[in-house]
Image 1 (cartoon, rainbow, N blue to C red):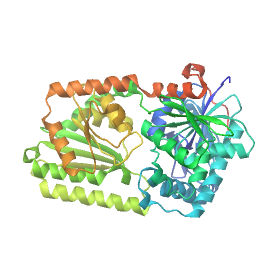
Image 2: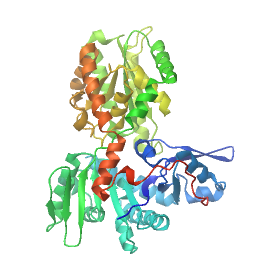
Image 3: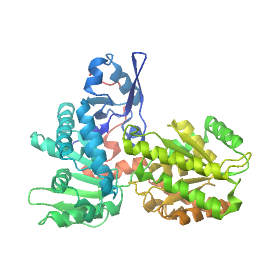
Image 4: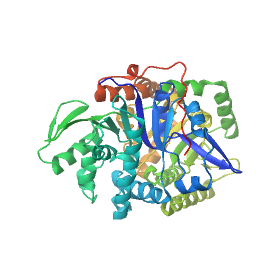
Length: 495
């Protein structure tokens, strides 16, 4: 197949629309997927299909000005094709099926699921809307790369529309083992949906094994062949590939940014305000899978059992706002702030506070400054598909003297376990011991470990991830999507 363009499909477009004093503005988005694929599509004439973040009802009362999305496309370097969602779609598809069922279930937390059958109906309908956008904006020469748990059923919807596209799917979150997956009332439909793609990619070999285990149990007659990171599934109707493709970051971008004069100055200011101590950094989105309360309890345990850490360490915990309107997330925020208050109240001394707590988003320059300033990073999710913060911290550790403390349940652990201090986030004393070990680690060992981590991430960067997926999917790599020196997005209608 001669592939002309790369088309990315995700829940959200990689831009943020905001309205202030009646005026709309557009800015580049953030997050793991945008960070990962932005450099890949930029100036290559690719396109991105997704929801704008504003519902049909909102835009009816306040329409977007003509050309706003075109401006966003010019800033990102690739075309933006919007999918329109209603208030009901967002409530039942995104907050409902995606984040009250698939998100907790795939993170091995079935007790947090709300298996409302109304959610499933809307989930299929909205996946159909994304499929319709694929039909309208791509042709058979394009490679359509669909992302994450919100859009599992897009390939099935394309088939129902009678449309042929060469498709790949990548799941950014973990895939659960059979005993957990069986709890999903729509397990057969979800499995059938995944098996409609030409290539299904997972973060780790563990996730791929879990998926293949479900196929063996629920799809008798399916043959699985091949060794290595990519397997072939053969059904009576079709064949597809299944592989493990660990996502990564643009190592050189983070390394260069961390070395810049502006970031260096910001890092010095952070250290100047928190002098004579080792700084530990936590950066987590507000989510129960990130294990933030567990992390805070581990810090309290370390301060209690290792008194010499008092006045000698400070945890800078950044919590990025997320889904604040959901009651469970609001309660989690309250729990985090209660623990921060209790620990600071118990251990604060004149001139020293054990936890500096930030509840806000940081831009990339600010984040790089914190990475650069901090002596340790505490990355301890209860379960994570990959966790790019761990990789970003290492890439930004240009002095190669940082210590990474990493949960063994993060997908990044497969690649980084040789250089990181590995911990079980449920083991409060074990994490506390790792904090103490990191504090006492001599410079020689720090450099030995961090050099190994940086070397691995530099080798297996974002471009390596994309190339490995594309080679498996269409036997091509990024060279098949040539860089365009001058890219001007085609005119498009605001909607």
